[in-house]
Length: 440
Ligand code: 5AD
Ligand code: SF4
Image (cartoon, rainbow, N blue to C red; front, side, top):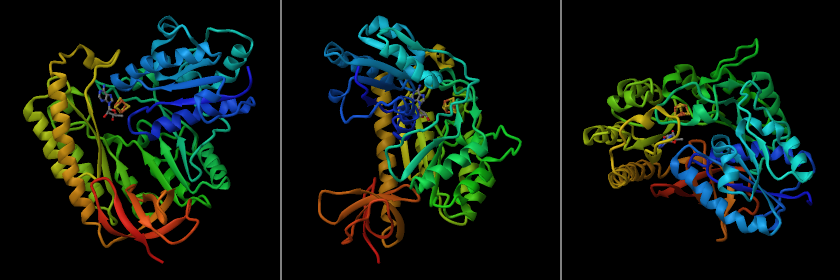
């Protein structure tokens, strides 16, 4: 086998970010063995397919996608399946897709070099399916493909027990990295030229430094922001129950910490939240929102919402709509409830039809679209700093993100802007992006 490989990327959460970070975690092992990443599966001799199982749709996609890989295997390529579906389905994958040669769950990425040498030796049924979560998830030499923004997992797994969620089963209990190792890596990233770092975790704000320094999450944010060369610090996803005033204080006191909090509510009905085992009520959630809104500078707030959880009545759904109205989110990811293996909600009566779930989802999304249209329009005339990450085919057109994570498309006569921070004045806006012009 020649030493090249290609990465099949599927969305982990439907929110993009995490999938990229997860994929990049495991890229390091093959690279350190002399493998090389290529542009397309056609150019690869080994295809690693990274998978997600958080919602049924994502998991189902895996097997139809693997069907497409069958022909590739007959052309002599070796196919590997990684991630949460690999962890969940295990050797069953060989039964359903016999053309697969490697199944490696998320807890075994450190074993990839060893598993690859088994493949190189001609073994065609190679597995890494340990559930040993004591091992840390630190991987050396992580490769990242966005040259300005680095993703860094600081806490793995989840100790919450949301009734619908498969993560505690696929990713195991919470394990945090030491603050020293995180800070060391951020320094390396800054030396490599990254100016923005995004700290990741399923419940990032439950971070608990295992070292004697016992650094709080808010202290970690401040120390990361202090690293020379770092201009922006982001973090996601925050759990409402663990969201505390000191995090808002850190954002207030350090402008490098981005003015954006992703705080999934999941539902606006206390009754449904209780059934979901979300550990807070609507009122408790709104108190956290009030705390964020009281900050000295505006902080953008985004959320995740699930519609059609078992037993969600029309009244419950209306409460979710009114939550959107009350909070005035700047962005929302929304999903139809889907039953997942092992989860407590699996045994609840999932009586709401797909059609009704679809209807609720459409209503919810339209409501949020209107809110974003109004909120974004109110930003016209304001100037924001943008990290430029895209260049349009159209001349003098660029794009990037504001600190609040809004997409800003803008005009500039300058020639080389990628990776630079520029000031842009907003002229107009749609529900999902802003349009402006660079100010000099
Ligand atoms: N059904 C629908 N949505 C889900 N999510 C997690 N599990 C499920 C499920 N079983 C959503 C939640 C979470 C996001 C990452 O995915 O909103 O915040
Ligand atoms: Fe899943 Fe809940 Fe943990 Fe988020 S907090 S990963 S939804 S169990």
